[in-house]
Amino acid sequence: MNGKSITTTLDLVFRWITKLAFVNLLWIFFSFVGLGILGIFPATIATLGVVRSWLKGNTDVKIWSTFKQIYKQEFKYANILGWILVIAGILLYFNFIIIQQAQGEFPFVIPFLFYFVLFLYACIVIWAFPLTAHNYASVFQQLKNALILGITKIHITIILILLLFSITYFSLDYPVLLLFFTFGLLGLAWMWFTFRVFVKIFK
View 1 (cartoon, helix red, strand yellow):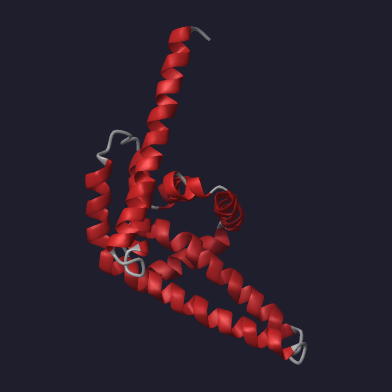
View 2 (cartoon, rainbow, N blue to C red):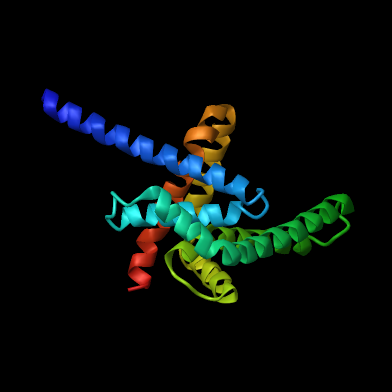
């Protein structure tokens, strides 16, 4: 590899690092703009929307204006979707506490069914947000589509659960990543795997 190729490669790597860091900072900023509880979900979908543009070949897309546009456009929808999932997650957590406190009083089938429902919930969470960034559907239909994709593409679902968990876990050991790269990397990994499926389904 000659010097020119090395310089070109380093320039490309630096530009992508800069893009990911910028998207990461935008996710943090717009989450705070929405006071956290109202900003996290639209900021997440905006991040996925920007990454989707990159994956479609629009690598020079204006990140700030695109992020802001998606954030504003999806603000209400993203919060409805997100808070439905949060409430469902809270209910699952309370059920988990009850099962734990029962200390074996429930028949074996009850914990088994609970973990099965928990897995279905994880499927929905994994697919609902990138689906929203990719195409429009009613909230109910989006949740239904997410569940179907989560089950039929179970290998990708499992890969994403492990990958997103690993990135988050690693970032907690290195807090500087949370500020500059974690959410950008999460969005890139999340959308990269799901986008390949969407391209084949939504033509």
